[in-house]
Image 1 (tube, helix red, strand yellow):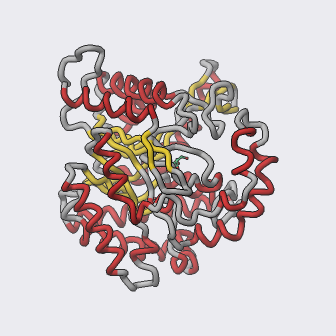
Image 2: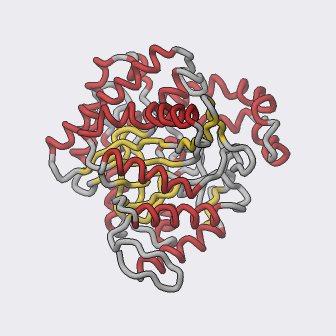
Image 3: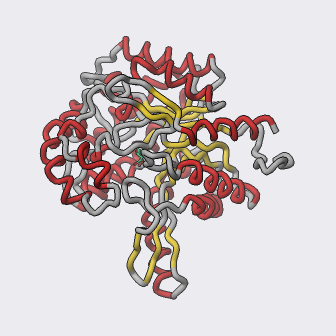
Length: 420
Ligand code: BGC
C-alpha cells in the first residue's frame, strides 16, 4: 500500500471499488419461484406487517407501504433489465471500477434444457458494456431465485438436481466468460436455507430442519461441481461463494466465549470448510454482529437501521481478520450496507467500514475489493419494497434514479483514494 495523505486512506491501486445488486431485486418482470410465492403471500404479509414491524421506531414512516399488498409484489421495480445503462452511469459517477450482479437462471433457461437466446444476448451486451467502461464484472449465478421447473423437480432438496445447476453454470460462463473473470456460484447459502427451510419466511416457507441441513449440503456440493466445471473451461476464472458472516462478540465470560466460538463455527465454518478447496477467494457479505452473553446471542437494539438491524460497521475488521486467519485466501467484500431511507447513517457507515477494512489490511488481510450493497434501491425479499438500501434512490413511479448525498460524498472519496 502507498502512503496516506490528507486523511485519505491508502488502498492498493488494483482494489475493486464497486457496488452490488441481484437480478430479481432490480431487473423487474422476472418469473420464477419467488414470483409465484410473493403473489400467493402478498396479502398475508401486508396483514401481518403491523404485528411484525409495529415496534420499529420508523413504523410511522413505513406503515403505509408495509400495509399495502403491492409492496410485496416485485413487478417492474427499477426496471434495471431495460435501464442498466443508466445504472452503469451511476457507477461511473461514483468513480467505481467493479460491479457485482447476478444472471437470472429463469430467464436464461425458462424451460428445462431450452436456452433463451435473447436473454443470453442481453447479458452478453451487459458485460460488454461494463468492460467498455472499465468496470470489472463480478457475476453471481444463484442469488436466491430459481426457475419454476427446477423447483418442481425438487430444487436443491435433491442432490441429483445439482447437475442442472452445473449445466447452467457451464453454459452461461462459456457464453459470457470472455469478459468475466470473477464468479460467485451461490449467494449466502445458509441464509437461503434458513429463511426458506427453517424460519419459513421465504419460499418454500418450511420449518424442516432436516431439509434445511440437506439443502445446505447440496448447495456445498453444487458449488464444488460448478467450480470444477468452470475451472475446466479455464483456470483463469476466480470462483467463490458469497458467504454471509456476522461477528459474535462474547462478553469475556467462559461460557460466553465457548458459545460465541460454537455460533461462529456454525455461522461461517460449517459451510466454508466444505467448499474452501474449490474457492479462489472468499466473497464476504457483512451486515451486523451479535453480542453473546452466556449461551445466548443478542442482536444490538439501540442503534439500528431502518429494518431493525444493529449497526456495527467497524466489526468488519474482526470478520475479515478471522476469515483470513482461518483460511488465508484473498477476500472480496461482495456485500455490505444498510437500509437508510433518509440517508442519515450511510456516510458514517461507509467511513467506519473503510477504516475497518483498512485496519484489517494493515494487519495482513488480503482484501481485493469492497462492493457496497446496493447500487440502487431494490426489492428486499420478504420485506418488499419499502427498505431502501440504494446508494441511489429509485422512484418506483417514474423510474428516476438519484444518487443520495452519501453516495455523492462516497464517489469523491473513491476518486481521492484512487488518485493517491
Ligand atoms: C442478500 C441481499 C439482501 C441484503 C440485505 C443479503 O443477505 O444477499 O439480497 O438484499 O442482504 O438484506
